[in-house]
Length: 149
Image (cartoon, rainbow, N blue to C red):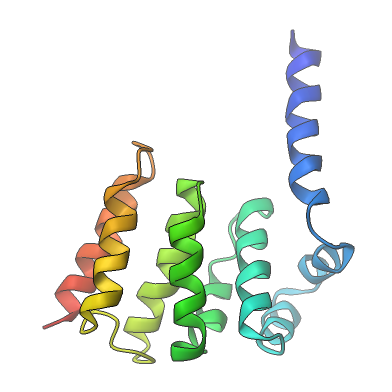
């Protein structure tokens, strides 16, 4: 039974990693400072891809990368919102919501003041079914609402 579990976990991990180019693995193998610097040089869409992948496969999670993505503010926000809406995995939705929260906290965009963006986020969070991740998503939304002042 144990051998079967190890095989299944290994298979799931390798299939998750194999859907990304080898350059992503090289990116994660960089020292932390170089990884942060490298991420900032990619276009916003690829920054989001690499951030999501890093959050999925590296433990502890690469939370500092959220700030790198968030610095793109208005350029990256529509990409992140779209990804939250399209994403099926609640954990990844929460990782992306963290970027939205950092966009607000860093003053890049007044996310909380944009009714359309907040409505999209609220709809995505309300449709989440995962009892482990939904409370974290709700907490992020509450922090954004409080930022409205």
